Structure formats: structure tokens, C-alpha cells
Image 1 (cartoon, rainbow, N blue to C red):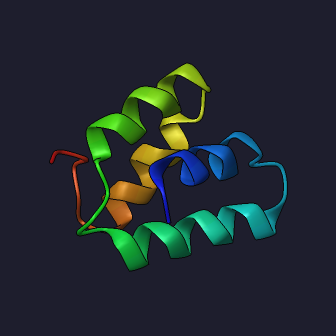
Image 2: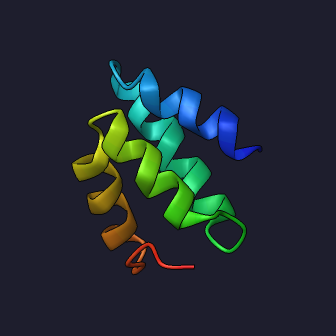
Length: 64
């Protein structure tokens, strides 16, 4: 999973299945992802609140 692919998935968050997919990706790769990068793009794409909530559910504050 590349970070660019994850960003593309986040950009298309318009179905419940998309949300589930992002949650699964975050969970499976939480030790490998650059959360600062994801947070910066999430803000630009106006999905930063979603990402913040998902990171909180993983026990992460998004720092790496």
C-alpha cells in the first residue's frame, strides 16, 4: 500500500465501504504509515476530521 493510493481512497470517501476500506488500511499499516503526510493531505481534501477520528480509534495522535 503506497501512501498515494491511500490518499486516493480517502479522496473518494463517499460510500460506507470506502470508509471501511480506509479503516482497514490504517489498522493494518499503522506502524508503516507517515501520519504527518496523511494528515496534511487529509486537511487539503477536507477529510481531516475523519482521519483524526480514525487515528484516535487506533490510539494514535498521528505523529510519526
